[in-house]
Length: 321
Ligand code: TA6
Image (cartoon, rainbow, N blue to C red; front, side, top):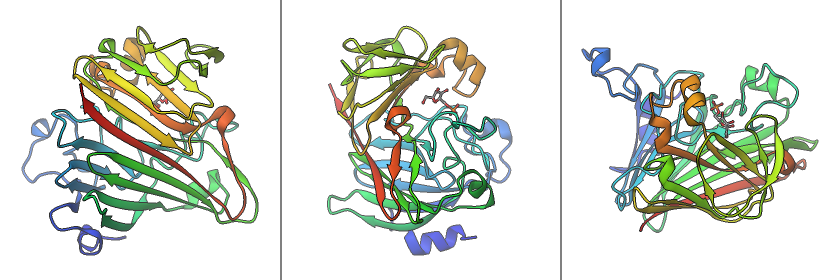
């Protein structure tokens, strides 16, 4: 087990990247902890990035980016639920969960967790550095364990590189280190902070086919811009182009550009589902988030031949209107 001190010595970057344990502040009663619950004592390790361009934090469990705010923006761009909890072995509500090696429900095993095990497994930091433009880079590798091997019996290596600056870049690389091919589905399940779900629209998916997952899964075609008036859970297939969230309330545009990804997922739970989920910041925290996820799922699952790699890259940028 690597200690926070060892991580800071090996990977810390003076004033820009540091690691801390999520521990309770001595003498702090639970009701004075931050509303997010992130002050509770999970013992999980968090990387904090604070550079001249942006701030971000990432939990080593799940390689889960929890926050990103470029300095040019008065509000966070990545959304974290105020009811988010840091708990060993459980996913965090909000941020950027890494869904891998399957997206959604497992194809044949209903007992396996939705969206795979990568988002709740421990990851190891393997590299850090500063980019020529001043952004901070951090690379993590998934550590396999007995449990993951019972669910994914393939020789593979999964790495996530996060580059935090005025732009947020995430690169998820799957390497097939074995001798037979395998198939994955995956997503960087980005939760974005918006003013209100009624004040935003998404462009970039007009004309795309999508699986509408509300009710019985049905294949439909997107007609023009996406606006929201109810639960929306859509898996757009063969969609490789940039998507833009236009936010009239926050007077900003969030651009989500990608490569190595042919699927885009657009999700808002709306009232009933949010109430059922219970950790989206009751009663109406869900209105302030929208997921536009870069993925490879359903028709776009990726076959990775033995000895080869596949990388999904997402770049997010916020512009004031
Ligand atoms: O990506 C959309 C989705 O798959 C929805 O169907 C949904 O319920 C959501 O992700 C959140 O999933 P989770 O397993 O984190 O509760």
